[in-house]
Picture 1 (cartoon, one colour):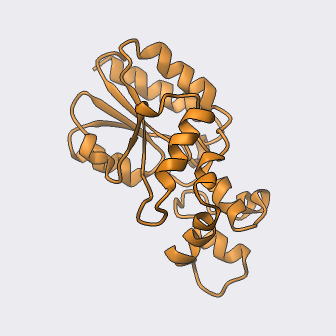
Picture 2 (cartoon, rainbow, N blue to C red; picture 1 turned 90 degrees about the horizontal axis):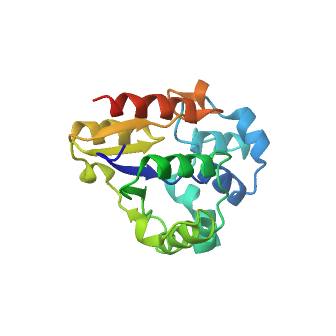
Length: 198
């Protein structure tokens, strides 16, 4: 893997943004998982249903308000995903040239302090140097032939490829690989092996 610079998405790949958001809305996460529509990335519709709202989905403002009310601690305290340590260890063993970065949407459109919280999360939860964190809203700006994005959002993956980079869709309940979401590393390893052969 040393010929590629790897950009590893943070939210819903390394830390559980969805669980944090559900709990910020004071809803039960297990109930959310039962109600969630597989393959739908945007969780605002599920949150609206759980809150008994007549709207088909929460507005962006209503979605972000409880998250912003928590402040930087929302981001700082996001829980690791069950596979995070294994995924980071796997990337370390492939990445002998120290080219793996954690990339994340800074969410500053919605929350001024999100970057501060994500830096703290990187340091405290992921045990990674914050200098390895790349906050960027349009991840496709990082795309080059020798770069790989690993991300759970289909749109980010498609944009990255369109701009000339390599990308791997990380299995998640909210994308087309939802059937593989409980064991996502199998897919990631398989795709990385294909890249190694290129």
